[in-house]
Image (cartoon, rainbow, N blue to C red; front, side, top):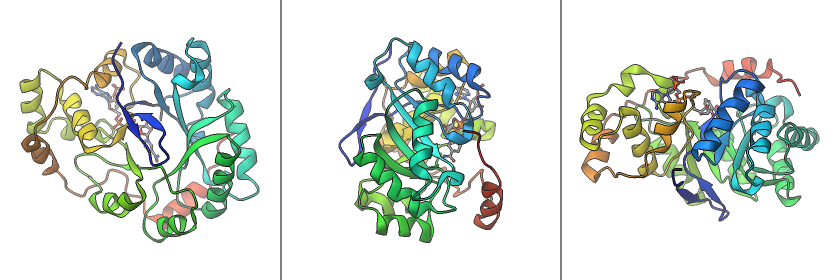
Length: 285
Ligand SMILES: NC(=O)c1ccc[n+]([C@@H]2O[C@H](COP(=O)([O-])OP(=O)(O)OC[C@H]3O[C@@H](n4cnc5c(N)ncnc54)[C@H](OP(=O)(O)O)[C@@H]3O)[C@@H](O)[C@H]2O)c1
């Protein structure tokens, strides 16, 4: 079984730096199969969300794994339909029930719309009540991020955003550095974009280290200090994505990958459109 590497968050909790993301794994049965396979391979960190509609599958897999609850890091995310000082507490309790656990390791606000300030307050209370160990944000930037940072008595432990070699988020990193907020990468492999994965620099380094191009990308993320949870249901890919702790890129090789930054996102929906699109979606309980 592969050794995990742990990072320390700004509240001193230790998070496994590599996890499995379960976005677009459809349904609880498929999710339970994928998470069970991952846990057998040594994964100890699962990233899900209410909006993925597969938290029950995550909970089942962990329950049947034979592992103690404390051995597995569970992250989930609240959808804006559950934001608000009065509605968020009940949403957290329902989430815990779906996941068959009495605490979350990390709870995030999934999107920067709706009553996110009320929801943040409720998440802080959930930390004090022992229902959540760490709280953070996803997809926040600009004035809405500033508003949370100004109000927060518990500063975000993580910020989960689109982050990969074509979109490296340097400005956000600098902004969050004073808070000790770690960056979590979504689309760490560009959502599987073949052009990104086939970049010649990855092919050259893959040959040098006897690794795949994807493993070179993941290794770059790890050395940048990013938390990653590439998504796959393919057992070989799952194993490969965890086999990234036995080699190290040199500073020059890291710089060559840094030079790929095009400040180019894959997800480009403007905030005004997100307001409508996300407000119209309400995940089932
Ligand atoms: N907070 C947010 O708003 C947000 C948004 C998007 C995603 N996320 C999180 O980030 C996670 C990862 O994002 P993502 O799944 O969209 O993108 P991703 O991890 O960048 O890419 C997934 C794609 O990469 C392929 N892949 C994975 N491992 C591979 C390997 N070893 N070799 C070759 N191909 C490989 C997968 O194909 P195969 O299935 O064939 O392996 C899949 O097509 C999600 O599951 C979710 O937890 C969060």
